[in-house]
Length: 384
Image (tube, rainbow, N blue to C red; front, top):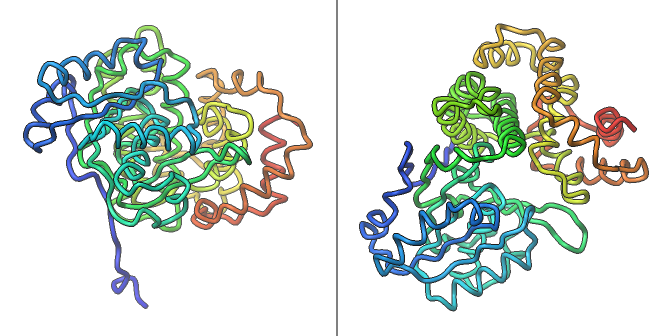
C-alpha cells in the first residue's frame, strides 16, 4: 500500500470555545442545546478556589441545576467514577459539566458513560469499549496541561493493582470544550509547572509518534510555539495574562495533537510509577522526557530539530535537546518534587514490565523499549 492509499482518521471535540470569560456563557450554551438538568463534576481544590461558584450559581439561577460531585480525588479510581455515575442517574441529569484538571475531566467523561449505559466504569476500560456516546459533556479545564478536554482518552486507577487504566474511545470526546484561560489565573506555581510540562510532553510525543497524522503534526508544532513562549513565564509569580492564555491554548492544541496521534514511552513509563506512588502525572512526565528522548535520539534527529525550533530554542541536536528538557524540568522544580518521593529499587523491574506491557503507548514510540531499557530509564531518572 502506498502512502497515498492510507486512510487517516482524525477525532476532535464537536465544538470548541476559547477565550477569557468563555465559561460565563455556560447558561446560554445549555439553553441552545435544550439541556435542562446540568450535573457538575469538580474537586475540592477547584471548589475552595471559588471556581465552582462561577459555574453552579448561574445554572441554579437559571433553573438548570441537577446536582454536583465536588470530591474527585487525584488519579480517580473506578469506584469513585461509579459513584458519580450513580448520582448523575439519580439526579436525572441530561448534561455532565466537568470543571477541573485532568482527573476531574477524565472522571466526568467516564461517569457520563456509566450514567447513560448503566454500566460500571471498568466495563469501558481498554480501546473502543464505550458502546456509543454517553450523556452529553461540557469539559472546562482549570489547568493548562492535560488537554483532556480535547481527547478521547480517560485515565483511571485500578485500586486493587494500583495500575492506571485507559478508557480510549471517540465516544468520550466532548460535545463542547470550553478553554477559558481566566480559570487558570490563580493556579499555584507547582501545579502550573507540572501541568505545563505535561502539555509540552504531549505535543512532543504526538509529533514523534509513529502513528502521527499530518493534522496532529501541525497541531503539535503550533502547540510548541505557544508553550515555548509561555511556559516559564506562566510558572512565575509575575505571570501575565498573555502567558497564561498562551499555555491554555497550547495545552488544548497539544491535547488535540496527541488525540490524533499518540503519547509514547514517556507516558508508558509514567503510568505504573504514578499509579503506585501518587506522584503528580506532570512531575513524572516532565522528569522522564529528557531521558526517554535520549533513548529515541537515533530515530528522531530531524523531528527534534523542528520541534526545538517551534519551541523557540533554535534548531537543536538530540543531545542538546534532551539536556534542555532536563534543565527545564529542574528549573520548574519538578526534579526536586520527584526526589521527595521514596521509590525503592525493588519496584523497578515490576514497573518496567508493566510499562512495556502497555502496547498502546509503547508501540507508537519511535524506538523500541525493552524491559531492560525501561528499568534503566527508571533507575537513571529516580537516581537508584
